[in-house]
Length: 358
Image (cartoon, rainbow, N blue to C red):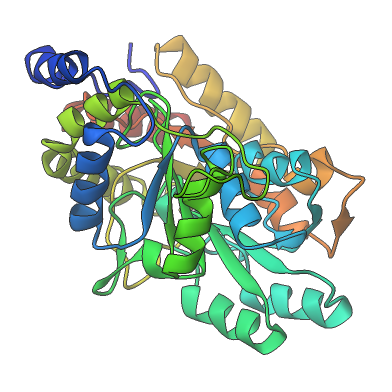
């Protein structure tokens, strides 16, 4: 079988060394030594500052919103459900603006039109879908024009650069997921990268119940800390992450070369690097979609309709500024298998079957 995804497993010999350090110190959570090591190593590897580790990617979005005083936001309808549900769970007034048909990311033109209709939103929450960076300059222009803050859901964009800059350095905050299915993981976990140190400092208090550095209680917080055992997993996997991303990128490029002209593929940001997080294809014809998914299943090849439905339909009670593009893309996107344990030959098996079926 060719699995859709297969999480990285940390080397037990390396992992045990870190776990022994935790047991010897007796410091299991609350910003311990491994938490500090992982923070510093991730900041260096990713080329960022003000990185705050948290217990998962959903809380990363919620804490970022809280730290930035966001009570209302316009977001993308084409993303994993957590992008929207994390906002709604926190009571944030949420509205949807449409995506670009080429990139599948939030469209700056549609966003500008939405804000011209209703400017009563605090922020824009956009997703770098499948690790493909948004038009960060276009969104920044719109946000600056309307005086809005920007949060990027970068759950898929670990290690991605736009030009010489980490994609995480755009916007007021960027959030990462370190769930086991991601390119890099800590089993469960995540991080927030803040543009401003003052926002980082506030968020660090918020994830520790609102306790200030002097021990005095500040505004109400939550427990969203990443524990030392999870940091140990992250430190272990980070040792090999460059080779992992390189291999996944080779697989992604092989898929792309083999499927050009066979299926529609999203247009990647022209200045962006790759991390091989996902392999999305788009098939407009519903019958061809079903035929392909049946053929893949018959040959023990997993695939997934990711993402569907368009979130403006799932949360139809929320304001929508029109999301026809998202609804169309969500109706035809399929993600193919892509993970570190696949080979190029596996990719060729999948692409051959696609060509034969379509």
